[in-house]
Amino acid sequence: MNNRDIGLEILEGLKEVKQHKNGKVKLKTSSLSEPSPAQDIRKKLHLSQSFFASMMGVSVRTVQDWE
Image (tube, one colour):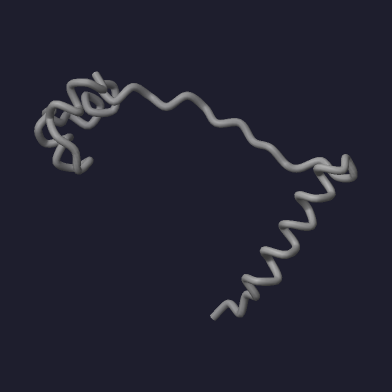
């Protein structure tokens, strides 16, 4: 089991934010790619709008709005 000290991790993170704010350290960044359209995913999986909606936990109308 991992014995993490969450309080210490939070304090270290706050120190890092303060250093970044003061220009002493550069924070890591990452880029996110644009997600595939819902319709492309649904069709690739050969799913109906109804089944896709139930898998996603949303209404069919929501899936239709996405598409």
